[in-house]
Length: 191
Image 1 (cartoon, rainbow, N blue to C red):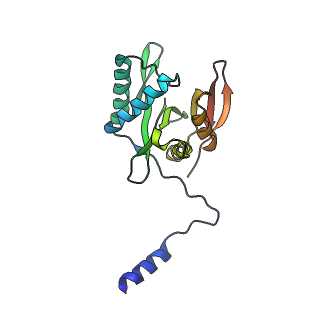
Image 2: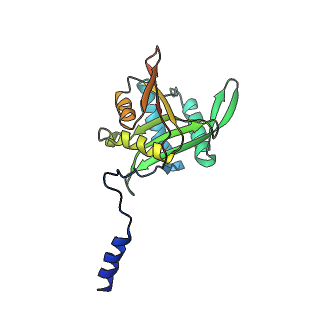
Image 3: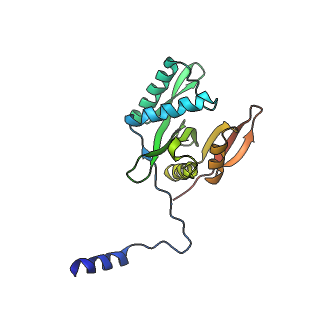
């Protein structure tokens, strides 16, 4: 009887969302070293189709990307080439999971300083979860996790599923260059 009373009383104290409110997507989690193989495999698949921001045709380049991702996971910094120098940008390698289940997808975001917009360098949904709206869910969760700052991304228009996911998540197409690479931006989103 006491347990039933506690459940009843406890549920009355819970905050109720206002009518018509949409529940915010769950936040992204920081990735760990164990997640790097999945990220690199997705980047390799994208490179095979000409859709990766990196050229990964040999093991040396793949090893370099792995070291840069390890540095990002360990130190929160992305090593960015600027001319002949290497700059240390803020970097976050994030993943989206379904509860305590498997990783649905990941993204790499970086920016040169606190005042700059986050740049989504690469994002993907695991093949077994593609086509179920998880791409837009990943991007909405990223917007929520990186709240208060605009997000930018560039990708080929040939990545049709990624383009649809961006548009569903509130990104606007800003510009398309002569190589059919589109720039998208999502405005700052506040909690």
